[in-house]
Length: 404
Image (tube, rainbow, N blue to C red):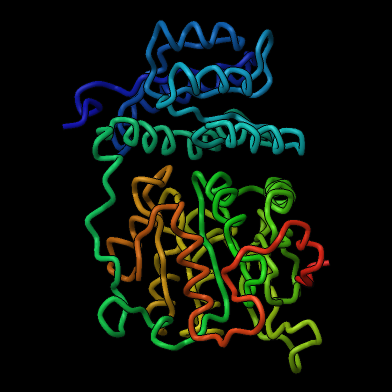
């Protein structure tokens, strides 16, 4: 039985803003009185007004989750994170970020330094009730998820799930793609823990991949552009935030903007000279699974357009977004891969896919790129360098990806 079934989760918050401290205090008090909530009970055990005090309170109070502001006196949130990675490496830290470009960049730095996730500070709400609702919707489910992950036994975290590696049609040990259908598009869905996962996965993909790549990462507007820039700097592939009508060309990587759903759509006329046979379609329908962009929109459109030529990858994330789309890819003969539990920040999205039996493989993050490279190269005749090989340094600028 989880210890959280017998006691409330212990939460420590660090923020120098009296307004934010007041909002958080009221939020936790209301949650404690909400008998209808399916989330576990939570107790705000303390507040810290600066980074130095935060480190002292972590040692004194032993919280289950830390909610940490980025900008604080004496020691900022990034420096606090650096200290905690040595003293409390398993403590989940959720950052509070502002709706600014500087806040977005600092938040991505925090995730790279070990923060589990982030939430947006209430901004632009008309009243206190709206601010409380905005923060509670983001923060409380994350606290519950990360506390559960922390409570999972260390031994269990090291053992991959006992799920079949192959679950798609074809000969034993073989997926549809390896049975002869060439992959025509790679689509990736990811949420909680995604920026870090993408920074590990994308640089390991072959720079000469002969297919377009599209990614939905659950993130707000402004953050996705900053993330695309960050990924582009660390990767041999060309990565950019998508725009409506962007061409789908071999090796081009498009990241869905944070305020729009992204789909693939046919391109008018024949292929252009760059090899594009499709294009990005953005739309602004209501959020799906409380998300915009939503993974399901991308996966469903890829299944319709590319059928068995679709390779869908579901990485770490909370919730079930991507499950319906992954099922559509599978039903049309495409290939679905899911990240395993041990390497996921939260095994929600990939876990739902794996447990449904539609995943051709359930893989650790460090093995995902090799699997993707191999599946994309399967069924293609070697022309020069084989897709999946690593290019020599300096070759990045010589590869025509068609993004610019």
